[in-house]
Image (cartoon, rainbow, N blue to C red; front, top):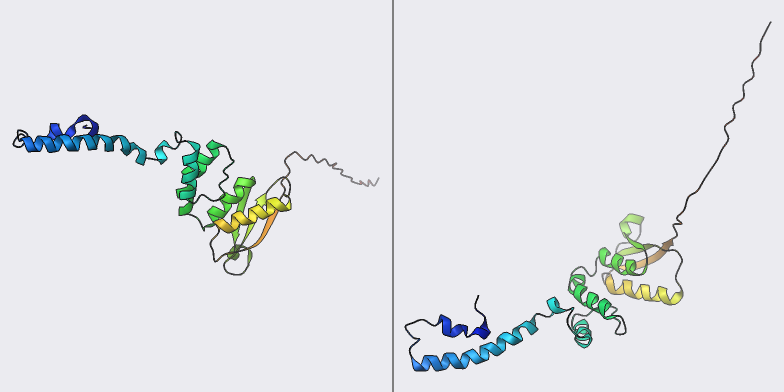
Length: 186
């Protein structure tokens, strides 16, 4: 495969015009610029090189891709992951799956119940979450903010419920007793 930096134009020049001095001068002038463009072309491929980019560029990409809840003080690996998933998240933003993903980031599991599943009003929904403990008010406010950013604009959050599922074994015991009276006549 021919590379721009390898004087590709001089190699592919047809023999009918390769002897012309003007064509040679033009090809030589263009080849220098093409070599520069070839070196800069890999800069265009940003997302495949995301792991190699410095933190300042990752922060700028987060702004460009409108990454929701991007924390500038977060770890660089988390930042890169948020930027990498930003385009895919925007594709399904406004769906129940997006709300579930936002809630599942903070809790073990989350389930979105649409209005027809629980007998609510149209365009309303509930979020059911499984957690070991109910979070404080500050965390709850952040969750509601995250849900509002991920949900469809016309939809309304009715409630958030938390289920505690303790894990462990429950042992039960019982006694079975049977009593019969027998009468004998002699």
